[in-house]
Image 1 (cartoon, rainbow, N blue to C red):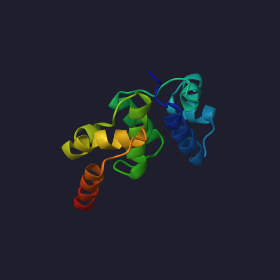
Image 2 (cartoon, rainbow, N blue to C red):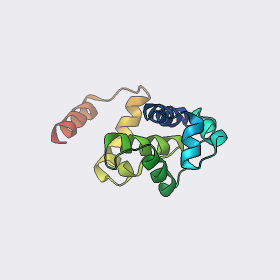
Image 3 (cartoon, rainbow, N blue to C red):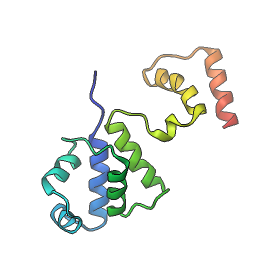
Image 4 (cartoon, helix red, strand yellow):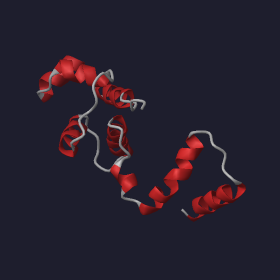
Amino acid sequence: MPKPNIKAFGVFFKERRIALGYTLRRFCEEKGLDPGNLSRMERGIISPPQKKERLEEYARQLKLKEGSDDWYQFFDLASVAGGRIPPQVLNDANLIEKLPVFFRTLRGQKLTTEQLDALIEKIRKA
């Protein structure tokens, strides 16, 4: 089974930290973090934490506004890095229903005409 892409989370974290004007060491000093662990996480060597509370703490340290696109992307990337589907997707019955078609499309399997028509209709109604 292939490993989930954990680098995307680290790249997002690092880009956000740098955008705030922090070096790795200064960020860790100010936030009380271990620079070795944070460096490994930013490089995708270790996975991000999966506990919501810890991720929220990181998000606040990165000055992500709760409810913003960046906020959701941060949590989505952490979920994917952990090999999980983001909770917002799992809690949406309509999205769950559409996941098989989405996964099949990602794998390059062609949809039947009926499936394609049904997908187009669902998108129109969304």
